[in-house]
Amino acid sequence: MRMKKILAVVAVAVVVTLSWAVYQRSNRPKEAPFVKVARETVVSAVTTNGRVEPLEWAAVSAERAGVLERVYVERGSKVQRGDLLAEVDRAAARAEVEAAEARVAQVRTELEVISAGGPAADLAEIQGELSRLAIELEAARDERAVQERLLAKQASTRQLVEEAARRVSVLEAQIASLEKRRAALAGPSGRAAAEARLREAQAGLEAARLQLEKALIRAPMAGVVYEFPRRLGEYLNPGDLVARVGRTGQVRVRVYVDEPELGRVALGMPVTISWDAQPGKRWQGKVERMPSEISTLGTRQIGEVICVIENPEGDLLPGSNVNAEIRSRVAENALTIPREALRRNTNQDGVLVLRGDRVEWRSIRLGVGSVTRVQVVEGLAEGDAVALPSQQPLAPGDRVRPVWR
Image (cartoon, rainbow, N blue to C red; front, side, top):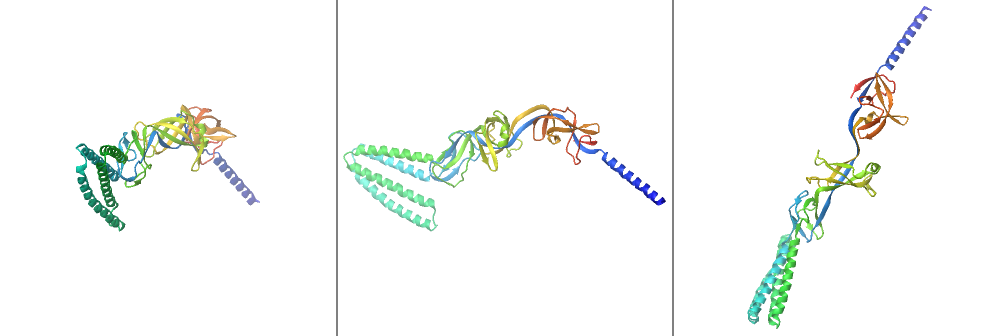
């Protein structure tokens, strides 16, 4: 009987001890991080990416076929109108000019002979010149054939073959000119025919010089070379793009805004551009045009918002992929809290506010929000302490031990 009483007393003591421990634990303050409401400028911004384009630009294309022999610029080079950008191989064009010049000189000589008293005495001279040129032509044709055979065996070069072929062309042109001269000298209207041939030869010379000039690729306007996709030694056909030149004092940035964010963007909103190639540098501008349609960009549905950006130093190059921030709303000197302090209770925004050593629920009304902070329009005062998320869940009325952030 006595033993039962002792056991009962011990059991009661254990229960009391455990109950006290549970009470102590449940009433122990929870450690939680807190932050004070502070005044800051809050910027609500749409952050995305885009691509730079010039406001005014011109494409530069090859006008003559040939190998790209010289390049005078690179992407980012500043040029004036008429500056040389590149040069196509001009050997063939030079040969055409030389042949045309020789033709003009020969016809002029014919006119001089006719003016000096008639052609009869010159026929023998022309015949002698034709005989000499015929020998040279035969030798030149033999040399061309030799070079072509060597090239087929990879024992010669294309340049040597072309030089041999040009030599043949020049000699054939000289012989043809002399034969026409001989025919004209022997005819009754030699002077009129010679004058007509001179006009024809001069027109041919002008055309040959134009072709020689076309081998020089020049800038059509002052600006910056923002695209140059060609390499030295590359073969170009007429019409092939060589470069793009644009003015860069102001540039256009095509900003890709996700469809759900378009409602936050409007004409005239300020835009800040950054470029990973120049960390820390910022360019300012504004929204100029809203998108007219929604398009697909990879896995995104976007609208292309056109922005005009000031670029006085010309260092934001067209063709660059950039970062864009469109500032849709700004609240100056606003009461703000960290976004992670926000809580929801029955569809109402609110926070847990420190009162003494306990927290209480406070409904609030929000204003402008950024990625990290949000404006509180109603419900809090400057200096109020609000709870941040913690490992121990908090509820209104809980005792807390604040850890200040």
